[in-house]
Length: 62
Image (cartoon, one colour):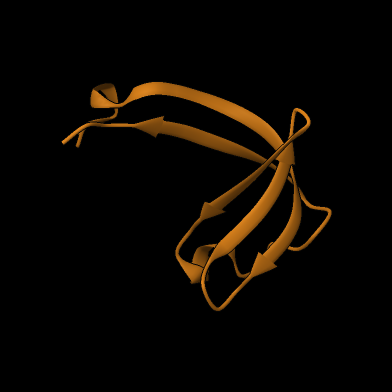
């Protein structure tokens, strides 16, 4: 997949509210909204509640 093939690309500033290193689940708060996102566990292992992060979002259809 090429980056130009991704729809709806945008970034969001977020605050980490909880993490689960075993599953890679990261809960964040952004713009008054709670989101739950998933990363490979090794990629998010250093995240902790209170961290400020930037999420890069997009999607594709099969």
